Image (cartoon, rainbow, N blue to C red; front, top):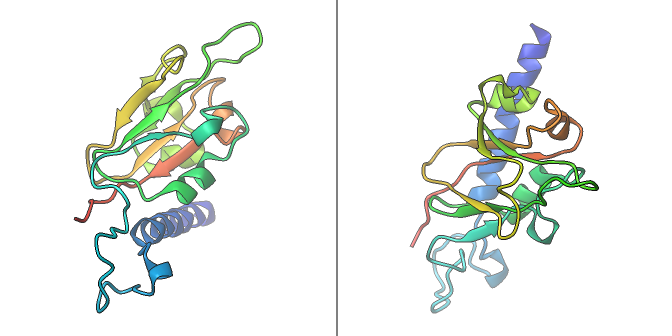
Amino acid sequence: MGSNYAQITLAMVLIASMLAVSTANKDWQYGNYSGWGFSHGSYHPNKTRGPNKIVVGGSENWHFGFNYTEWALKNGPFYIKDTLVFKYDPPNNTTHPHSVYLFQDFRSFLNCDLSRARMVGNQTQGGGDGFGFVLKRWQPYYFACGERDGLHCKDGLMRFPVFPMFRGY
C-alpha cells in the first residue's frame, strides 16, 4: 500500500513539474512576465512558430548513461506537431544496440515494464539521420530504450517523459 501511494505521489509531482516547466513564461527577462502592459514588437516567447525537429539528447544523441529526463526538462517545452529525432549507432563490435519504446502509462514507465510498451524504433533505425517521432496529441508520452530487458531504461537513464503543449500564436 505504501509503495503504491509513493508511486502515485511521485507521478503527480513529476506531471505537475512537467506542466509547470512547459507552461512557464519565457519572456521574464524582458520585464514582461504576465503578457500585460509592454509590447516588445515581434518578440515571441516560443521563438519559432512552426513545428520543430528536436534531436533527443542534442549533440549527445541517444546513448547509455545520459540523463534524458533532465535533458527533456531543460529543453522543453515541446509542442504538438514537434518531431523528436532519435539518433544512435547501429550495433557493431564496439557498440551495444539501442531501441526506442513508447510506454502506455506512467506506471509502466516508472518500472521500466516493457510488457505493454510499443517499439517505435528498432536497433538499426537510429543510424545516419535517425528517425522521427511526431508528437501528434496533447497527452503524455513516455519513451525509453528497451534493450537488455529494460536495463538501459532502469540503470542507463535512457528514458524520459514529454507532455507536448499547444503552441500559442
